[in-house]
Length: 236
Ligand code: UTP
Image (tube, rainbow, N blue to C red):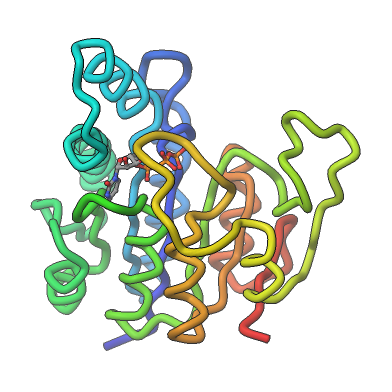
């Protein structure tokens, strides 16, 4: 298979308040189309964003307490977002798989026949960060790029710690010392990169790149193999 790149697009990027941010979807689609036109295969994993948060909160209010069941609600949101993003990509003329694969094995198979696949979550117990790193492993990609809503990995949460220190480069072991052991912390938003995904990256020597996906020129540079503003998390 040609070179494969895997990108996790955090669901929060796709929403402006409660609505899908059409401009962002259009701009992100163009970057994916450009990368695909250079002959690179692209696996995209979309998060749940606003839709997952709202639906998980509603399920909690109506008495659902089981994490497995709340995770299923989150997965449904990620697959909805993936379907919407795949449709937008298709309208730019990109050869994208029409169905949203439900496992990373199916996604890898589908990448044999299409330039791009778009998927959401797989099973309860982790987030789409872990799915994207699993997809990197299955499809033979060396790096997994995580586009989220912060500029860098920081030593502590930058939203509540103005003195948080950003990292431009770090190792997977250093990242693990920040995000903690590989445990599922329950449905809904958590740490900068899912610790379960970090463990999968360590076990399979997958390099990670983290960047702010609201600044799409950074994603374009990263996918083109150029220097970008963000954090590179090396195998060692
Ligand atoms: P996300 O991947 O969007 O996780 O999945 P997140 O970290 O909460 O949100 P972002 O990164 O800000 O977008 C949403 C929820 O769906 C469930 C989890 O409950 C997760 O928190 N989920 C998702 C799974 O259980 N399995 C999956 O494979 C994906």
